[in-house]
Image 1: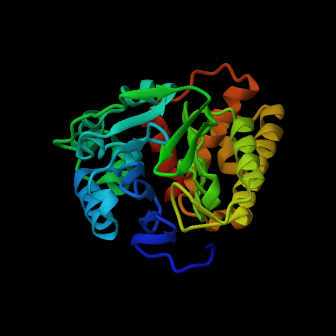
Image 2: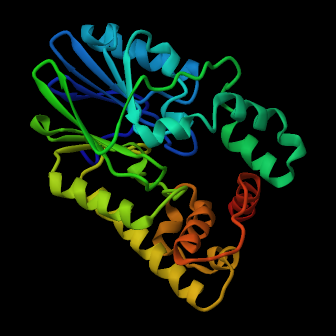
Length: 314
């Protein structure tokens, strides 16, 4: 599937599986997935606002009668671009890892709406926040959390298909989940994969994320639907893994040399990775890695992190 045209909309993956893709895959423009068999359906993630989610659900219902009523919704993690549309999937069993469900209660749509409304008072951070999130509408979204949680692994059935939910977080967030359909050799990764985009290490530890990449490669899937970016294969997973290892090792060198995390983020040469979308996320990645290494300085708050990213994005 890697190398296929990357365009917005529903991609038929064959045998009742679909991917919803949103180029260019930058901040907030996430992917989702659908597994159907017979009259049953399982949706993987909703989108950042109601308008986007309605458009996706309509296209899925047109493509498959089983998607007219979604039976099960899996949220791969707590970031709003993968769960803020949950309220539109009425009557579904909504599943997430326990850690993700707890995290969803912290950065709600109301929080995002408030940050946008007050962006003018937040200086460079507010201007950056408005630039990357201003196209989304957070007002009027009702937080709709999971009604079933799990830890470790959970097996679901969709018709005659086995669907494996595999918790690999904390990594990108506290409770990241992979959705594996082994008979169809398909994996929906949530934000464990950003293809042609820079991953953002909100939580860590980075080793969990590296191990999650290894686990996907071991599955030997024919198609991989990342959280952001085009469909990929194991080569895309390997590239993501290489970035994580590179950033870990480069940050460690600068930590051992006594460099501050902000200075380290500016100093690390990204080489070919600088062509990936949102390279400014190196700021968050280095600050998170420094905490892993034992840095005792107070962690910057979210506004400070966005101000630092805004500086690099310029």
